[in-house]
Image (cartoon, rainbow, N blue to C red):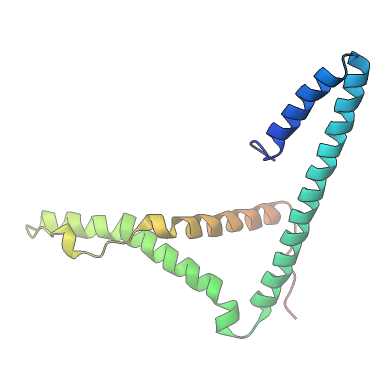
Length: 149
């Protein structure tokens, strides 16, 4: 967990209240320890729920990947190719086309070329790359993929 959780400011406020309610340091520390334990249990419960959700999504992904239907198993590769093509056009092919046109003496007005708003597809592409990186990590750690039946 990184960053401030929504309840962190509430916990800080409660800790300040504990210091004012219990002037005895020992009692205040006991109350703060109980509060920290309750906070940890809540955080662990959140993590367990996130883990269960991730496992359920993995099962859905397995079912989709095993499908013979291109509409079920093929949507991820399709999105990957669309994002990859948009990336290639925006950052590889379009600059090369413009450069070659300028070199041969026929400059291209950029306003006539398709403009792909890469900011729109960037989260999808980066999300897919992140998932790819996780699979690479699994392969490095020796987690074998399940054979298809």
